[in-house]
Length: 227
Ligand SMILES: C[S@@+](CC[C@H](N)C(=O)[O-])C[C@H]1O[C@@H](n2cnc3c(N)ncnc32)[C@H](O)[C@@H]1O
Image (cartoon, rainbow, N blue to C red; front, side, top):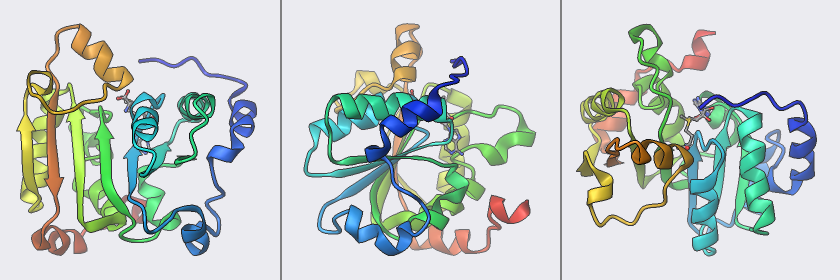
């Protein structure tokens, strides 16, 4: 989906300033903004935000963080939350590779990856959010007993991700090649609605890290260390 560049995105972002936080110093003040007694879930690559905003609306006792690196998309998600006057969600214009600089370890209960960019060319595989280099960048945020929920219409990306996660020792559950034919509760993302309307089946799995996962990811050089 091409998004026309929005000149006024920074202004719109400022209007929704209550829905974001300065990342500088956030690590030290994290518990002032997010109640450690309540569950905290994160979506990476939220796009226009329908999924995470709807989740936040439906689950007021949970807390939510939306990560999106394109500000034009992020402001649309922030405006959705502002219009609904939600108080349990914050938005950050960040790349997944930067997350451990901003958030403390083991703070997230559920991590959502929805319709992540497939990066079909092999030379860009490292940019896939389910590539081990990316997983190594965000897994430290997930609680040891946490889980990653991944869904996509893109079968080659899904097959790659199943192989990559299995190789990393994740325990894969609820794996389906046709989510909409199951009775799993589901909130459709903007991309999901578009692709399922065209008849494309939606693939999904839920992944739980194991000791092997942490062992394997120890030796992996992070993307940000390469630049
Ligand atoms: C194909 S769109 C899907 C958007 C939304 N999840 C949906 O299903 O409608 C993928 C989104 O992930 C964002 N994204 C891709 N790589 C990212 C990264 N490394 N860090 C943060 N966001 C990323 C893109 O900017 C884009 O908005």
